[in-house]
Length: 303
Ligand code: NAD
Image (cartoon, rainbow, N blue to C red; front, side):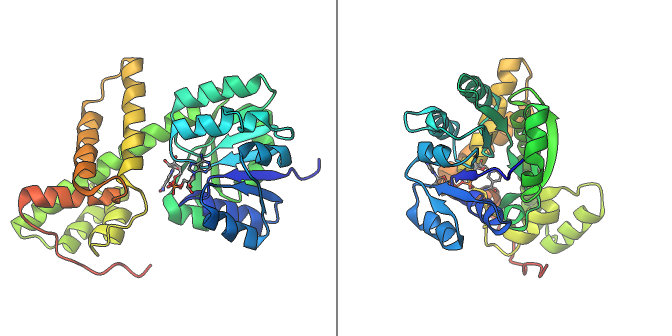
């Protein structure tokens, strides 16, 4: 089988490094984004530009998307100038976090045009996208997975979640709920410990040597909170979106999530205090304001 032509829509924090890795791996790539500067950077590496999602899908057999919200994914996939109207496209791979409902809607609409939708949300942040070490949570028919696997290996580690549309998205939503919950409670603990007189670095050392170790204590707090840069690379608005999608889905399924609901409110308050684009590690600053104490700055680890 000849190498398929690829397309990529959404060249943001996650999409740009992923698209770059595909071009650098030698794939023929057509790109589209509303942000012309991001398109220019990919074209400089050898990608072709397209005027809209439909034009991408006229050129590419496999189209990837990494877009902010379910509404934007629906428009890009199913709108008048959307992927659904493309002539070449066979597979639509949505790398965005959009929730299982959107994945199912998009899959059933595209199926009418014989386009297979693959839900493939990712975890690992901007650093994982740069290094090609993302976790990719894939749901699609077996044959599509077999075709995609060599391409997905360029982006990270593919983990097959099932054939049913939306299963990858459900996996992603619960993954992120666990991750942000660990962040919120770790920030609370850090601020309390500092107010009591503990050194924040000692606290992290103990957490990470013991039973409290999690992705916040091991990575987010040392990288973005102790240096007080608050630049982990994931916005409060996106984290709130993921949490909302997860809780809405859980509620529809009859699964109460009281802990997750509290975390949703913590994110709401962080957004109200610092804005949509504030990094979600700013949760710390919210708790600092309530506690009347500031976590003292410690240097960022060199690795
Ligand atoms: P981002 O806002 O940095 O990038 C989104 C890109 O989409 C931007 O370049 C924007 O110009 C473009 N865009 C918006 N509307 C468009 C449209 N109609 N047509 C074409 N392009 C359009 O977001 P991001 O952080 O890269 O996240 C992308 C997706 O990945 C989100 O669904 C997010 O939840 C998910 N995600 C993000 C992270 C992270 O750490 N940032 C990690 C895992 C998953």
